[in-house]
Length: 130
Image 1: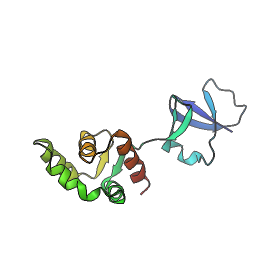
Image 2: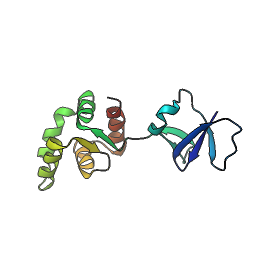
Image 3: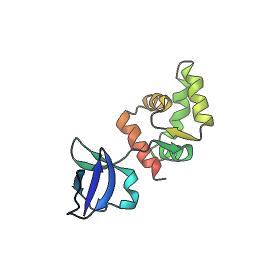
């Protein structure tokens, strides 16, 4: 079996001899086609990798932060931000139903917690499983 790749998306699971102009790659061990939306094709190295979710709920985010010993550091990190970022961050933290990976608050809070982009991605991946 092969995966049909269109751009960085997994479009289908087909037989090895399926005629298509699209890129075909081997199915990785343990791959579940029903979870294909959770993966993407990394053009740089030709690997199927887990897609960082675009958003998670605040419950998921807080549980992931807690699991990594970071939850107690959030409020002090927000408090140290200069205005108007402090008030904006506090409103986001207190009243949002979810966190979007591309939201400026996520980058600001991540930096305040000492996380780089890869660290934030790892938290989103973990939160997505909760």
